[in-house]
Image 1 (cartoon, rainbow, N blue to C red):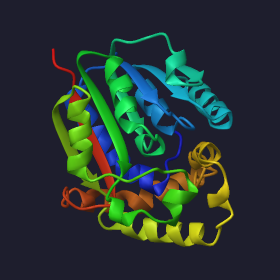
Image 2 (cartoon, helix red, strand yellow):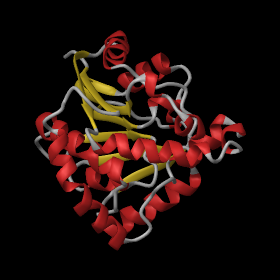
Image 3 (cartoon, one colour):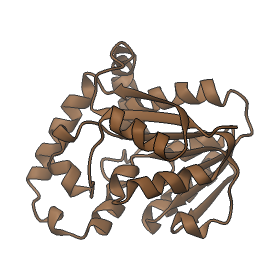
Image 4 (cartoon, rainbow, N blue to C red):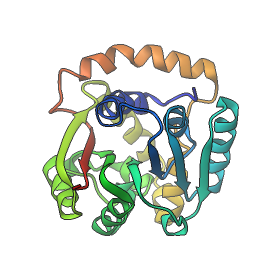
Length: 245
């Protein structure tokens, strides 16, 4: 499997359990918006019919190489979601994407429209606007989200049975502090266009070797277990809801 960053390991621990509940069978039609370098996409493509859409050409090139190396069948498309002439998905997911989009309500409506009746929309995003800091600016975030506010936006998009789950207690606070410290030392980055910062965000902090990935996986394991005891506390937010049948 492609290596995950420490934060992505914490997030995947939550996401994988939501998927196990809502997509227990293999072969579902899955769309990932903003698939980045494909670390999550490969995991999804092992069990499901996977399509990933990504704006950044450099990230998508890495994703294609990872899918090929893993031997999974994945449809990977560069460009806007509007360029994809397909809908009726069982799952639409977007991990660390919605905070990069100025009109988040429109984006949620567009993603929901790609789902079949009964389909699942699954998101992750940084939590708590009060924690908006230098790294958020450096990677092109427009905002962070309160759980209730994001749930309300998802309901407004037509979703039902919306649920939220915070993650990252306690390791997420340490990782966020380190990232903010790094970003604070690079004020020049925050002067770039939002589009450029967003494109680069998916390439930051990525493990460069399988060995690094293995060390990160082992090092984050106890924190992945520990955060399960704190579903109402953390720096990251996962939210999901379904389209009425």
